[in-house]
Length: 164
Figure 1 (spheres, rainbow, N blue to C red):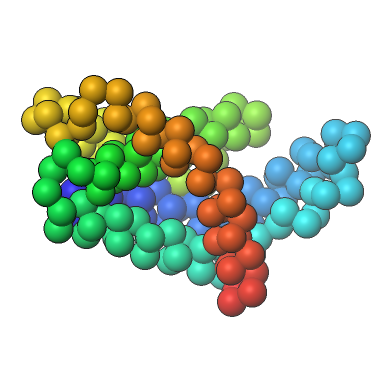
Figure 2 (cartoon, helix red, strand yellow; figure 1 turned 45 degrees about the vertical axis):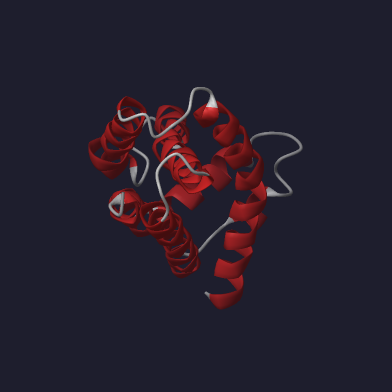
C-alpha cells in the first residue's frame, strides 16, 4: 500500500519534464476553439509550478497510504485508499485522450501505462479478493473522491503557482 506515491511519481515525473511543450501544444489547440481562446493562456503551468503541485499531491498520497496501513482493514481508511488508487490509475485516460488529440504521446503517458495503471489494478484486485472492500464501497468511495478531486486539483495548482 505504501507504493502508491512511488507509482504516482513514476507517471508524474515524466509529466513535469514535458509540461512546457504540452502546455504550448494545448494552448495552441485551445486558441482555435471559440470561447476558450481567452482562458487558454491562464491555464499554463511552468515546470517548477507543476513540480510543487506534484510534491503536494505526493504528500497527500503518502498520508492516505500511511493512514490505510495504520488502520485495520475494512475501515474508511481502506476505502479512501482504494478510491484514491482508482483515481490515480484511472486519470491516465485523460493522458490517452491528450495523446490522441495531439497525435503524439503526452508527457507522463508511458510511466503511467507502465507503472501507475498496473499498480492500481493489482492493488484494487488484491483488496477486493481479500475482502478489505465491502460490497459497493468502492463505488461510493469513488463518487466521494470524484467530488473532491476538482477542488483539490485547483487548490494544488494555485499552491504551485504561489510557491513556484
